[in-house]
Amino acid sequence: MTFGTLDGSELGDGVVATLLYFVVGVAVLGLGFLALDLLTPGNLRRQVYTDRKPNAAILLAANHLALAVIVVTAIMTSSDSLLQGLVDSAVYGVLGVVLQAVALRVLDAFVPGHLRAIVDEERMSGAAWAVAASLLAIGVVNAAALS
Image 1: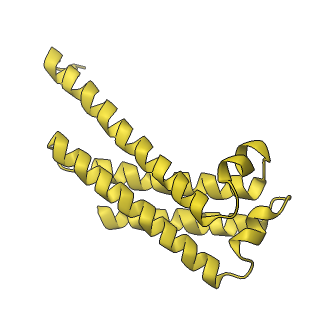
Image 2: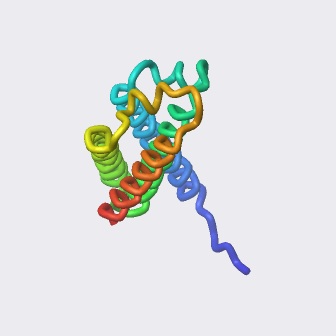
């Protein structure tokens, strides 16, 4: 088994590219958190990490997983040029955040038991899991649309 030769500059370029794509991915996840926080009642950070509301945590986890699938697909299908690849990944990542937000609004409008009631419940709710599964499914569809 041979690994080929690694030129120091190739390795350095790879490390820099990895770090830059990581920054884009984390920025998209952060933007996704902010969007979800705006679309759900109350302070999402407090609800998940301080109040430990299970339904808020379920929605946050599903949204992050959906966005991660979108970001990974955006990175994998982006241009081979580093700068263009970063721009591609950022644009499609932000588009994914927007589409996830729209999907959440549609779910909130058409599904009985609005998000406020679901997120505010103290006990884990089947409705939260249903919304979470929908968010994840929509994220996978968004990712497929990128490829």
